[in-house]
Image (cartoon, rainbow, N blue to C red):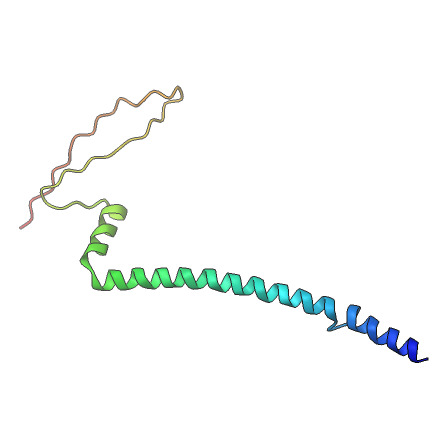
Length: 105
């Protein structure tokens, strides 16, 4: 009788609700969540640094204006690089003249 009770308790420990198998699955999920949290924390830190840079520095705003909006300073010349799109791989025969900035008042 004692042996049967022991076997029943062991079965519940290994395969029942809240048993070893479920505990191991939870440990794996917790570890996966920790890795995801670390990845998201790094992303948040990078975004926070970028926000601080944009708030405090003129260089970051200038860089964004140049790369995302295509803006240039007075006296600069803008050049556009066109990638080849011909099916035979030949470079395009398009020439782009420099764009002079408009005078500012």
